[in-house]
Length: 268
Image (cartoon, rainbow, N blue to C red):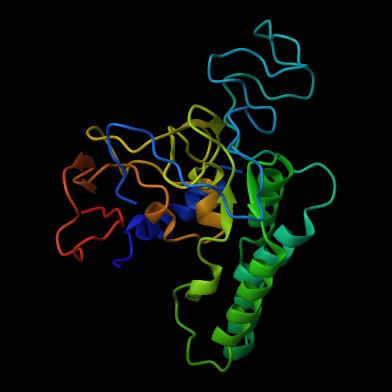
């Protein structure tokens, strides 16, 4: 199965996301059920205080009069789509982010005999903890343990060291699973159930879970949560297009060079 170049966009724009701190039938919205560990049905309510898709305030909160409450950012202030975390981080989120970011940074520094450089552990922990706490995603402890072990094995020795980030083992891909159904407000495609994309989401903007589109723009945004959790193949489960993304627009059929029957979305 070809690797979606959504991963390339994550590498190119991942820093922007931090600083700002599958073929599906077009005629129907097809959704696959979440992992068994997330036994609840797909949610259509909005997680973590996001306004409902019709613009109304979340249940239990007063409607806004347009003014910014004390301590809250003004309407024209740019803020990250995943806000500051209140309280301690989620343990499994912190453990996963440590393995994805801090561990390779420490190992690279040891191999080079240098100080540990910048890494995105805190940004990853903040965003993933928020999504888990909002019940927008699930994270299996067993999946996290497998990823941590695979990451440690991949960093043995120093032959992997290069100017680029350490590669993500397959055991670490696809382990952040969404719970939100069609029409739900979302901050990342990882928050939507398989088969749905978070349309309109970016480092500073929320979006709406939707089915892949047959035509229209694509490949024009970066997914903040996918970037920091290093889910480079997330487009395979959350495609933007019914066919594939070519020249920043959805096109019919599989991407050029794709294996027959492939469901991976490609960006040309």
